[in-house]
Length: 249
Image 1: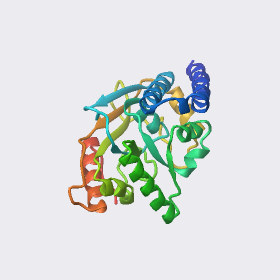
Image 2: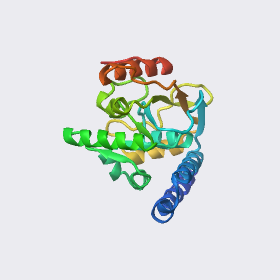
Image 3: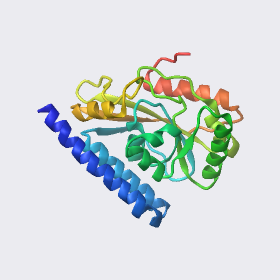
């Protein structure tokens, strides 16, 4: 029965992904900024529902205006969860482009891609981020630089904060957790780490029951004269405290 339910979920998810690709290709360029944001949010919420995920938001989400969102990173689902609550333009690793269907959707929705192994490319993306913040965009980054299993918080890449420092824009912390709705304990189905493939993670997620995504909203913060490394560490400690997670070196 579980396999049949998971198969049915994935068929509907596939249809939804294809519909999203069609929207990106045919309609997105005709919409203004607010319409795009509303469409991304609606599409993301629908995808979570098709996968059987409940979304729980703890705290008050920010309103309109330029903002740099920082979140911990557990799964490919993180982008969908954040967009379902607070639509953003994501700054992602370039290999996200290679994800089947999802990569094309992320790219088509206006993501900025970074080659993490190339220092010059990091500077290019920082300049682009600053431009987009000045233009009023809401950007989102995963400062850990890679996914974890949700049991701890990895060190932050401070260079991703440089755009917020240069433009004096606020940073909004979002803490992600995937939990069992009945027990409240961490649920590992969506994790996307190590040798786990995207399809494996997607299948585990489709098979899960009682899975919920929890989004913990922190307070918006500004640099207040701090350099990016000092600020990054302060934000990491605040997010770890909010999620009750240890801080490995």
